Length: 263
Image (cartoon, rainbow, N blue to C red):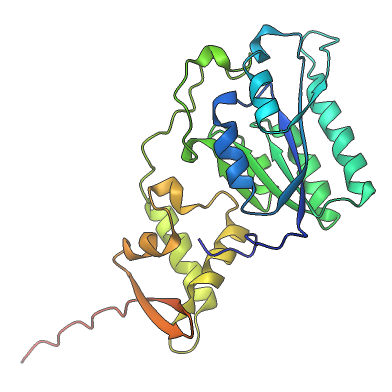
C-alpha cells in the first residue's frame, strides 16, 4: 500500500513502547519486521511486572530482539502502573529530541491521550494492537496495525500475559469488504480525482489512512492496495509507464446510460 508513512530514510528514528500486559509474545518477530518499514527503531522498551510468571515467555524473545525490559510493580490491585510508566517515559523521550516518531504497542484505550499529545508535538504515531482495541485509540494514531494480520507462531495462550490469556491472536480469516468500506474508498477517489476522473493510487492510499488509520489491504486478504482496488467492480485501474516504474491510477467506472425506449 502506498503510504506517506512508509519510508526507507535511515534518519527516521522511532521509539517502540510495548505494553506487555496487553500484547501476546508470539508475534514479536513479525511485529518488529513491520515496524522496520516505517523507520529505525532506535529505542525499544517493554513494560510489565517481570516477577510475574505470565511474562516468562517474553524473556527469551527480548534478548533476540534487543528490547529493554522495564520493571513496573503492580502496587495496587486494579490499578495499571504499566500504563503510567509508559506515558512518563514517552514524554521524556519526546523532550529528548532523539526520535521523530513513536510506535505504541497495546490494545488499551488508556493510551489515547498519549497518542494525541505526541501527534500534537509533530510526532508520527503508529499503533499496533489486537482487533479488540477501542476505536478512540485507533483514530488517535496516524496508522493502526492489527496484530492478527501479521501472522506468527500459533502457540498456546498460556504464553500471553494475564490480560491476553485465553485471547488468541492466531491469523484469522480476512474481513470482507462491506458497503461501508467500499463507500469510503469510492469517496476518497472522488476527492482526489482530476477532471478526467483519474486519481493517483498513492495519494488515495495516504488519504484513506488519514480518514481511517486502521485501513489496511491485509485486513481484507490483500497484500497491496492495487489488488484490493481490482476486486471492487466499480473501480477501474490504469497502469502508466514512468521511467523505471509504473504509476497506478484509479477512477470510478462510468455508469451505463439507460437505453431510450423506442416509440
